[in-house]
Amino acid sequence: MDFRTISLIPNVSKILLKILTWHLGVKADDFLGSDQYGFRKGCGTCDAIVALRVVCETSLENNNKVHVCYVDFDKAFE
Image 1 (cartoon, one colour):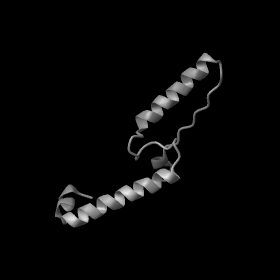
Image 2: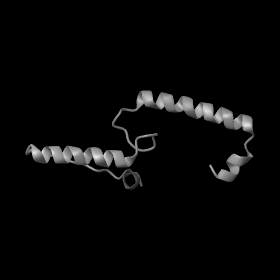
Image 3: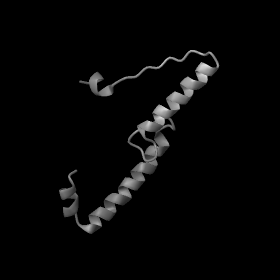
Image 4: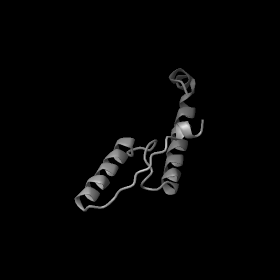
């Protein structure tokens, strides 16, 4: 949605949209696991990179193997 379009929405509609967004966010947190990153408040992709790095460093210290698979879903569904 363009910012110019948002500014045309009356104040009551803006309040209603914020309430709906909040409720959807609460419901999404119930369905999504704690390992779901990106597009969530407080869970950015940088957090996932840090978590992966910690796992890799810990496995190197303990001489364990780590297998990592990265799927680029943009290219996978083209």
